[in-house]
Length: 351
Image (cartoon, rainbow, N blue to C red; front, side, top):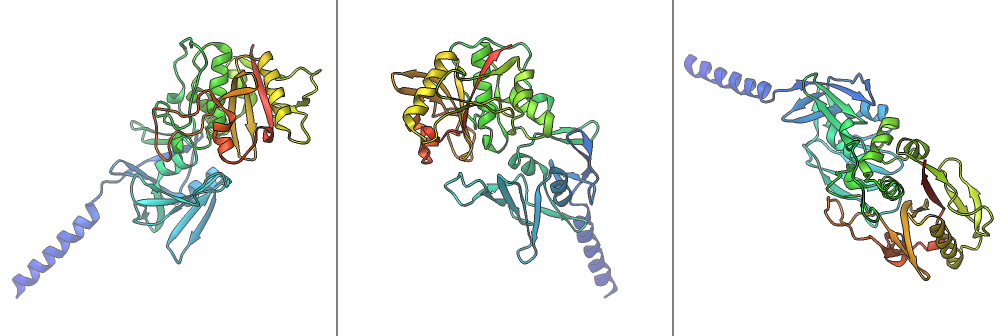
């Protein structure tokens, strides 16, 4: 009997030890935009996945954090997107907050299931970074995980000359933008237009790196900082004597078009006039979508656009669909918007 009890106790201790030592957790520090953050528990790396206290990270990133105890779930959101995490679930639910998606919600496979660490809800840092447009990098030597700007996003200072006009799309596998490029239309459009103006290959990563440096959000465009750092400047897209000229926007450098009745004929004529002044192209902004496309040429009354909209859904791609297409074939038109629904247009010149 004593031998059986001793054996039973030995088995229990062995199982207990397996439970305690099943994981080798590496403690790491987290820096957001260059500043170390103190969390409710020390962030860890487990099986190659960085786990972080989502409540503290949400506060630091300015995200809305809500708990749903009845479902044991956490929802984190901003004005653009929300994501719902559930413990032990390999998938999270993502909802588009802008109304620009045909789907009410979608599912995203996580880097690893969410867990509890010291009774605090912990999620994979990589998934938070991807959904909300941050770059995540790891300094193994110093055991620091960085959120925000990463020098690796900047392409070489030795830039190649481009032949013709540049075209970039948001979910290009070449650039591997966060969230499959969702929200990066401005970033891609700036890269296209600046490349055309300078005759040098400026990539979406070059533009995103500047935005990350400013705020940790690669898809948020700091208009004047971008053009200043990449060797161009804003100019009026239309002559100030043009009947279509409606003034300039100081924040974006854009030019408004006088078109109170939202007449497509007037919008078309104004864009053609702008292209005569700026044959390298102009950016056309749709803030109520929101989306941006680049007008690159026209043939008679047919204007051709480079649209950076994703060429696939929830995946990276090697082929875009919207290069040199008429407005009727852009994703803006597909959403029911007209050419005259534009907000403003932007033009650039080399310094």
